[in-house]
Image (cartoon, rainbow, N blue to C red; front, side, top):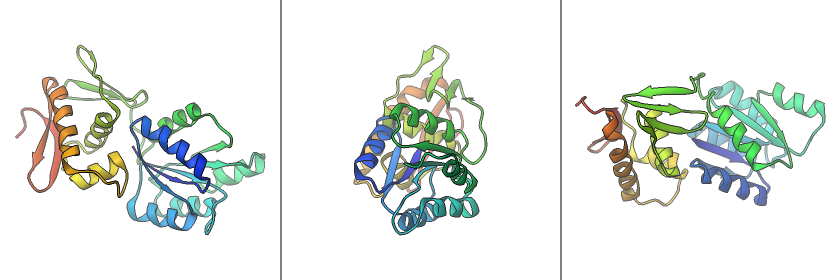
Length: 224
C-alpha cells in the first residue's frame, strides 16, 4: 500500500516508516498538517496515519478535511492524548482507528492491515485471479500448489497491479506506490521487478504485459 504518515516527531516517524517499508509498503512522510493535508488532497493514498498534535494545522483538521474531500482514504490517528474525550474527538472527526503513544509496532502493523482492507470499499479477504488467490489479510499470494514466495517489493508490485487488474498502470505510478513519491529510483529497477514477478505468476494463467510508452497491465495469459 501507499501510506502517508504525518508526524512531527522525527524519531517516531523514522521508526514507523521503516517498519512499514519492511513490510513492503511505500511511505511518504510529512512533518506538518498544512503540507500533509495538501499532499493527501493532491496525491491521495491508500491509508493516512495522522498525529493529532501537528504544527501549522492540527491533525483533527486534517482528518475533517479528508472526511469531506477524500473520504475514500482510511485514517489512523496517532496521539499522546489518552483520555476518553480525546479518543471520542478523534473518531468523531472522521478517523477510522485510534492509537495512543507509545505503542508497539506489531499492533500498528496489524491495524494498518485491517484499515487497508477498507480502501474505497470493503473487499473480501481472499480474491482470485486466474489460478492465483490473494489473501489481503495475510498478504499472501498462492497458487494451486501452495504459497508463492514474494519479496516485499514484488508483493507491493503485485498489489498495485492486482488492484488495477486489466488497466494500465504507468511506471511513474508504480514507482510512487512501491518506493514513495519522489524516490530516486531507476526505471530499470521497476522493469526488473516486473520481470521477476511475471516469471512467478505466468504458470498460473496470469501475466504482466508491457504497453509501450504507457506502463504495465495485469491480465490473463490468453488475453492479447
